[in-house]
Image (cartoon, rainbow, N blue to C red; front, top):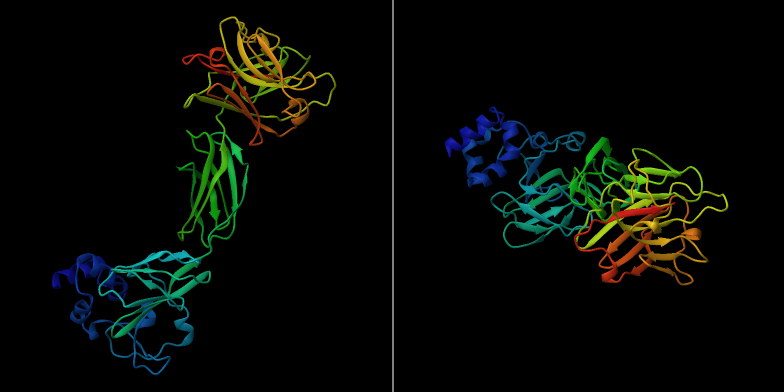
Length: 420
């Protein structure tokens, strides 16, 4: 026991005031009897008062509120003034965990020292005891509260040692979609402490600037695709999750484009400059396939208000060497003239579904880009198991089957196609 106390004194540079709040946890870790350690130290060796330590022991036969305030194992000290007791310091070396939790309650509290108290109270409300050294926390009011441990012969009060927080609510995420490296801002309800971590799709994001208790800015990490979960963690343990809260878009560039188009933004953006034909755009590389499915997304930045402009068409193609000229321009004037293409769009009294050697008109009331598209709309075009599915602003608007014998082969590379 003496060697244990020697290590204890050395680890805290012989500062007994600093040792007392940590005794319970260290006795638990080294399997020593807490009361025996206090006895060996002796009352005369323990300077200071309960107020200076941040917690106190209370005897049951006291006169004020049923007990009198006593220092740990010491002779009674003069009562602290009210102003001092209201500003007792908090300590992290406490004999219980966690030190914060949801105001809804229901989480588990664990006592780390011996002996285990008969009861545990948070903010004036009792915890429900479990087997061993665990308790179920009650609900509480948002803020800092006292913790009271009830033992056989005394009570231990830990002033302002626990904080309740209200579960967070995600108020906004701007933008709600983006590619790798996109800067995103989240706004939340008050989490009770500074946001310290943001995860997107299970991956930790790089934080920008200094977050606060109601918001943070971060960058979209790599190797994500589609709808992903957003998770926010605050330093007090508050956690916020929302499934499918953000759409990660694979950053695709346009490769071959028609001679009536111009590319900008590193070939991520194309714009028609003249005419109504020669507006075919092909992705710079084949689409990544996962589980027999590939997808690409695009945003409509601008819609022309001029008459005579042909409606948009989107889809997929399997290319050969004749589809792209050495200049980098697409050879066909229209995407339907590509070697093998499957397209949805255009307009002849309604949208068309064009596949090799076949053109079908979509039924009345079906998706029609000529009338349904507007600036700012996001299209997601997916090929999945012999069907083309189109989403506009996350809502499915078209699903068109493709016969297996007429679709791409299992090992063929599939490119995304847009005809402006």
